[in-house]
Image (cartoon, rainbow, N blue to C red; front, side, top):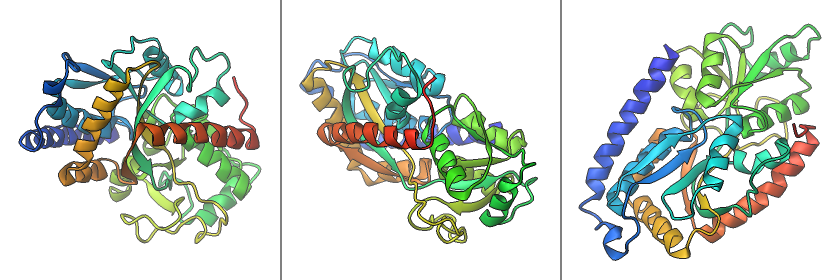
Length: 337
């Protein structure tokens, strides 16, 4: 049932994206009339499974960019190894603007997680724009867990006989980091079970294969509303508007724990021509200036807000997060493999 709900959600958003594209057409003239780029279809590689918190808004964005640029912009999923497989593919692509990478903060986490990466996140990529920013994660449990509050979950997690597990979309992603920081802060002993993508990690909790998750609201809200998952707390600085009765971590008794989640951004391979970067960022800016498109993004992934930062701003964020998350990973003792 959970897979059907995710598929239905993707069909709905795809339809919304098509409507959005039609609405954008009378607003702006295709940018391609001003230059030879783009003169063919553009592929955006998403290095995670379909249906996740990155994949869904990128499909809306691809529809909007298709209308603005006057060429088809399509999504290609290349999941695996916490985004490494798809990211490496783009790193080796021709820097002509026709193969791009849409990814999350796992991009700056993987250098501290995996030894021998065949790409360098600074040297081998060209930042184009930050697309979305997270506002927090939801602590959720399968209804089989006998905990109705965060403190009750913590009590269960401290028992020496505890065999409770939590899922994430792989090793070293922001969900993994948030969960391990929670383990440290709360003194619990929940075991990590990695999956290949957000959707399978979520389905594992819904099915009861694992019991716990700390995940973005966008993926878990339908299941919380449907009673298939129970929300216990929110990791943002303030309560999440769609879950007004769910306390923050501080309100639930876990002090000094604020984790606002991940970002989503667009990259090209190294040496992407500045004119191509400008054209793509210009198209993103046009799309983000349209209220209906911004609302589409807000609706597609609750718990994220549109960003639209410039190449320079986004480049700084990538460099800063590379250092910040590297320090966090050392602190929670996640070793490169």
